[in-house]
Length: 276
Image (cartoon, rainbow, N blue to C red; front, side, top):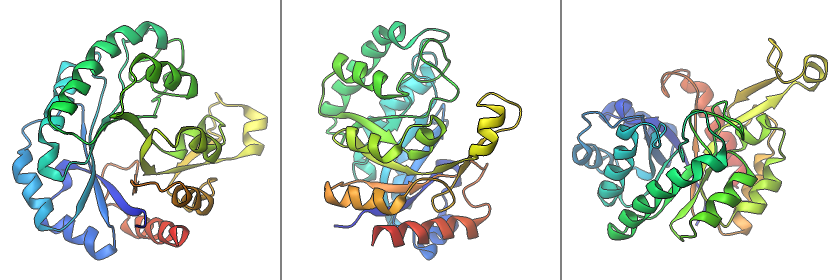
């Protein structure tokens, strides 16, 4: 079975017309996302809409800090309980962080919350819970959003909670931004990586060597696959060799996935070429 190439789309943008556009363009799956809260979303109606469009749902995601925002934590619980209505995709989001504390200092609160979430995942036969690796500016000693930011943090997290349903949602963009070789990291963590975001980054090495990481001029920019530094052909070949069962869902930073669809279509075509 080949790797599905999909789209990461906000739930508020999913209607019959936009789902038809995704199908027409050739996207094979969707990751459905929420920011901090599920709001008043009727999940059953959304599930029926997506099913009628014959789109595979790869992940249900709520982005926010579940250790500081009770609404985000409740969003995790609700998505776990309703995942079966969407064909039992992964439920994903940030691991969270106790604001302005280190990774280690946030571990007890993270363990309390995710022990509960994992228990619910087993009760509701949820496929798994995945922590996204975006750091949103967080570093080891302090931050506001997420402690699942690098290899050392992942080792701590999976040592703290050893559960088959706990894994990673990963994308090479954040590794390129951190000057980590993404495919090497993928190799170290493929046993835990179950869902991949199709986003990349490009390093302007001349500018970086002149101005450094923290200058006004950004030396690293985010891109879609095909426009950045990651060798997606090698990445897809590695996933195929290791019998990866998840999808790669194209992620954009814009306010709407449906802006500049031509560029998204180019990324989709590129990933399909790499897959083959």
